[in-house]
Image (cartoon, rainbow, N blue to C red; front, side, top):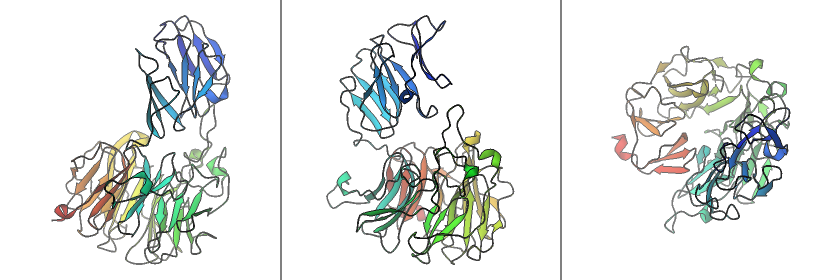
Amino acid sequence: CISPAKSERIWAIIEAEDAGLYRSDNGGESWVKTSGNRDLIHRPWYYCHVFADPQHVDTVYITNLQMWKSTDGGTNFSEITTPHGDNHDLWIDPNNAQRMVQGNDGGACVSYNGGETWSTIYNQLTAQFYRIDIDNEFPYRVYATQQDNTSISVPSASAYGAITLQESTFPGTGESGFIAVKPDDSNIVYIGAVGSSPGGEGALQHYNHKTEQLRLVNIWPEEKYGWAPKDLKYRFSWTFPIAFSPHDSGIVYACGNHVFRTNNEGHSWESISPDLTRADENKLNVSGGLTIDSSGAEHYACISTFVESPHQSGIFWTGSDDGLVHTSRDGGKNWQNITPPNLPEWSYIFCIEASGHDPETIFLSATRYKLNDYRPLLYKSTDGGKKWSSINGDYPETEISRVIREDPTCPGLLFVGSETGIFMSTNSGKNWQKLGGNFPVVPVYDMKIKQDDLVVGTHGRSFWILDDLTPLRK
């Protein structure tokens, strides 16, 4: 970072054996280490940004888990309290250093007094949801896990006009993963909480709205921090699938690299599958370079999507984050690899959707954007996964595909969540068009269809509901 107040002064925060904040006063010809404070440099891949005050040459800011300020050339730092943790960005008005905008995992905040006080984060649609669910109340409520915040439940309508925060509830600590509401008792919620719970690897919570009791129901109690995934008994991804059986609400499934089942509200679990991933040990080492950062978010070779047939109990389909698709037709006793033969290797299987209209029809959406491949990967099978056909049709070639859903009323009416919005097909994927209107440009991570409503969970712009699908069903 070059100081706007003195162009010869350059700041650099360095991840190295002798890590810390460095300063050059001669345009980079020589450097001096001004601070080795570890609070300034932990989790280098996630934070570690330095910002020079535009008017005061010795004032410098660093955003990290906390936000820090030095007024003596980077030697001593004091913490600036912000409305939320995980601080990533800062803009300072070049003409008035007291005026700044700060970005964190809760949103954006404005200060007019150099960071002494900040505006609220509760005035903007910036929630980053991973997966959503819907209960059967009236009006129904929408549930989600949100990045670096609690899980949340929001009513779809209010008797008081606008829906307010006071009408929301917070079932579990959330942050990461799936969330599942018991179909016949919306008091009971299961929450994936790898990033926010003391439960360690595969943290899974059970919440009861009536008693307000939150308890851990982990499948296997094992710490994850600092461990290589290959050294753990089971592997659970940041967003591991959780689902109630559509045939018996007393049965819950959760997935790591195996499929697990409980019929006693998580007091005990049984594995009903072998490892359904590639389990390439070369990709299961500790993450990070100079700084080890095995937090659970980077765990790989895990099941990423799971669905039980709505037509017959004991028929399952799974997809993994390393590109495999499996099925079992006997309650998990036997499993078959049914990966589409032309699916590119190492694809992330984001979603498998079982059709509500035909027991052998399934849809699949995958992505490879982490491998710098932005093609959509959309497939359909009409024989339970024995044969697959591409339904990319005229879907844009550079729009990745995440979640896919079929309308429960109109066969062949499909919706796909992408990096920039929602695409729709009325003919099972032959042709696609983007839904417009006032829907923002935003990653769509999950969708559910509730009667005539399309409910959308975005990663950055909160919940949205398209409240009448009737015209699209014609």
